[in-house]
Image (tube, rainbow, N blue to C red; front, side, top):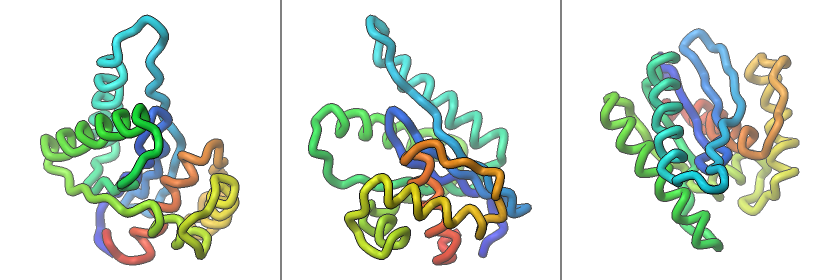
Length: 161
């Protein structure tokens, strides 16, 4: 395992995140980038970029790994995901931070043993990881946070970072 600080992301309006610092400390949560009625969608993009920059700078992030969604059933979700992904790539490149994506099925199979797990299964499986991370204080509050924990666990287990 490389000696790096890692940020794992489940991109979306409710972005799940999990951070593993060089020291072994792990923390996670979710950040919300909702657009209030009557507000410009540019606020969503600006808020996400500001938040991601804060995470990179505050935690000295070396690698960002995210859930690579290749197919959306809803047009709006696809547009939002594309916006977040573009900003992630731009922000990481600007800060000279390595980044890469992992396919949804790969993450789900690692977490539950099958590639089509539902949200509840992903949350239950993430709760089991908390002990491995030595983070019994962590509470899983959303499926987005659970997905980010799975992404982090996968890259650490495989030795990708």
